[in-house]
Image (cartoon, rainbow, N blue to C red):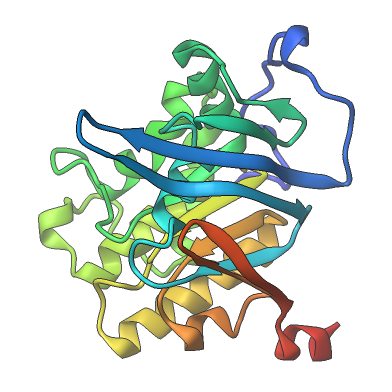
Length: 256
């Protein structure tokens, strides 16, 4: 079974009170800070950063350990709350949303690819891919969409396999298909090739880029790998919680 493109998986709208005037950027980070305070000390993880990402752009986030990369990704995903500042995703200000509202934003607007795959061990490959769509209340067409995505990542013969029956590379392919099931306008990836050998990592990167181009999503990827970042349109480098560089990638400029 196949599904015609593009088929809307989720059609519900967010409350009108969450709407923000349209912006050419799909992500706007404004003076964003994240501080952790303990009884003995204060740690400033992000110290007032500003980032604007146009729709469809592939942005790599780099920087040394402790620079704030993963914290920024967690804030973009609504998995953490900023100390101050503003964060807009596809016209929705997620700062201060309730958990129910944030869950709705995640369901409609964000796909995730994790370094550790995060597959449900008791679900098959197809069931893992379907899960976000089912949680979002998708219709019967989601099954065809799941099978189509798994076929596109080379797993047409693994639909009924459980994660334990799949290699690491195959599990990450399932995770890629799952990330795209609801056609999210934003895809967040945290070291998606970090747990894979070099050859498998290259294959996963190629599939991620192909899916990203085909689906027209905006990709924000955290990585330590300069070779992976070289495929991006733009590289933003963090250090000590600040943006220290924000540069177009030469290869991307040549392609454009």
